[in-house]
Image 1 (cartoon, rainbow, N blue to C red):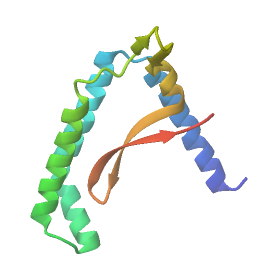
Image 2: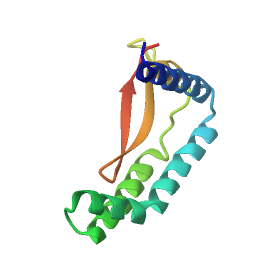
Image 3: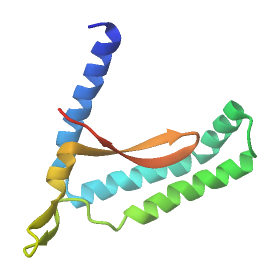
Amino acid sequence: MDRYDEYAEEIVGRAWGAAEAYRRFTQQQVDHIVHAIFAAAFEARLELARLAHEETGMGLYEHKVIKNAWSSLLVYDDIRHRPTVGVLTDDPQTGITLDMRKVHEYWFFSYLGIENHFTIAMTKVSP
């Protein structure tokens, strides 16, 4: 195993530890995290627009600022009132239960800065 593999193993191990801790959070704690991510993205909109414009040389800086502001706001507005903790649905007729404690074992949500976009990515992981 080379140093890159070791580094990747370390990062994945830390991510699993974080996912395990996150799985035990209350809805209020998750809401606080979601708001903090939005606030950081919105606050960084100018700098991220500048960096994207410098890196690509495409588009207008002002448009990138607007895109960043709206992207972060729309994502936050879409998810801020959604329940994401515990049992969300339980249908005895179909026997289908959506239990986020189980979902979080396999999926984790992350915000990725991709070309100045803040996008929610669902990434399937396995131990």
